[in-house]
Length: 308
Length: 230
Image (cartoon, rainbow over all chains, first blue to last red; front, side, top):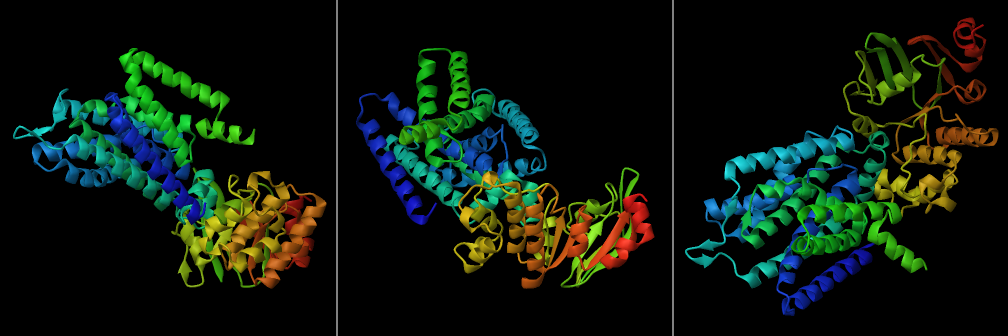
């Protein structure tokens, strides 16, 4: 992909988000605000997972780790240290990157399936740790001295900014000079080593970068809802970015974003009509159908339409 | 140039290499022969850092290679190919080369490499779509793209038809002469290897049993006993 294509995609993302935001903002359906903000947080989360998987072949079944650490960083700094959550949002990706990266480093020599399981277990350790540490109420920080810490319009604007900066940053990294090295590692790390590529370094690099952006998404979710708790480490949050990527189509930013939009919409609307169990059953069926009929997800469907 | 000094490797008590020593000098083509399980590939793995030797040392010029990682050994100038071809299947031919040397993008050197290995017409094709022979060519071109001093080829002629063997043999000679590269070739096709190599090492049961020029090796009784079972 050349520079012009990257510029074009970036332009589409910016215009798309602005149009979407304006439509939602003026819409009489106020719940769409929440759907959009939820989408912003989870889209960054999903593309961070996809970057790790599609560009270095590492499988994280515990990506809620950096996502949750980002959220807890914002919440702890705001509630315990009275720090403005916007400043907390700047710090969150770094703590998520550090902790997520360090945890991930212990798994890089494992085969993808075992790496995934190890990370899933780590995420469940954090689930119990945060439940014991912060009880089931978690951390709320919406008001200080009787006033909200952040206005609705501000958080709306921050959401747009987080989404645009996050997605374009990942797009640029994915299409930088290291792209082919990462893809080579994903396809055959043995051959990549034999070709002089420092496989360990690049695997660690992708872990830290992916955790950074997952932390940004998690941090924003906490900032928007003024709250976080142990449920952010639920197994469902480990699997949501995977479902979003598969449904949209892995290794293509646009596809993952479309998958995130669809599942974010379902994830915020469905529970109002059916139980959470049925909601996840629908996701499961959706993922299986996509894998069976269109293994490339929405990306594949669009390709097929273009051909015909 | 490359000095392997009394290298031993054991796998849970099984001796794969037993105090193997050999010297590789600049600009020549070396052959490494021996029956299956004689330790040839283990030696290549030790030289390239994929396996750590239990004893002995491997030096390349002034550099001690014994404890270096594979990618660090590549940086020192030693590159290998594999017995079963390992190209990056989902990348195009051109991308396979650029992946290991990003500065090749759009360069004259890239065109030279593609031309030298008859890959220019398929440069935009995914490696998975290439024939087995083309994959072998691509793997060697990728090794050459790294501009090494020594290339270790692990059974480059295995699984190729007569026409392709002849073509690849010519390429190996071409690499040696035109690019002034030293080559160490592990090969079972003795006739072809004897015509290619300037010097041959023979291994059996993890021990180097003979070495010399092809004409001497071909007629050596020890070699015929261990290799041809006569």
